Image (cartoon, rainbow, N blue to C red; front, side, top):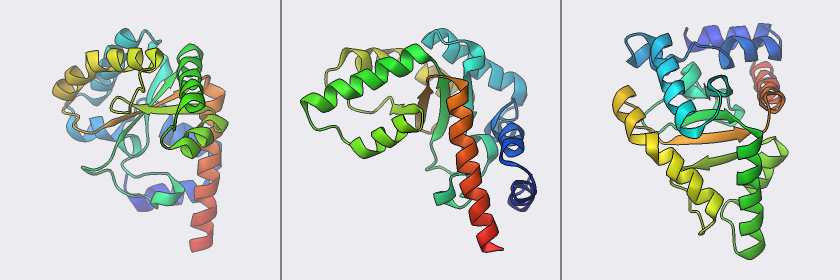
Length: 196
């Protein structure tokens, strides 16, 4: 599907229809473009992460431009996935969400926490965002997270030729995932309508 078709679909359908069509499900542009058997490859990708993080398989999902080819972030104006793009990975786990959120809270009470405003905004949007390269500040929960992620990072890079940094968005529940993305789609629709 090309950019024009996506924009037309977004413009002529409800936010929830766009969410279900493009952000939920097995169709992942990256695996379609670079894999041999994209549905099977995506399942294998999720299985590796599920086992290593001890998160249920169905609570893992790729979103963003790796999923759709074009970013749905209103500020990125349908930027195409490229060498500088991150892989945005949703993890739904109330326990992990609370651990990372508590770690950020503890760190911010002791020292300067880089990107504090962004982290606060994310929490109000129902998720915490973390990369395996983020500083841990000696916090046990963040160090444990990094250890877990690094156990499979090389495996997925080699197996699926993923050379992009992975941004983990950890949500407490699927309602928060849907709410965040539906609101983003609504803003995107607004920008499409303003441009027309």
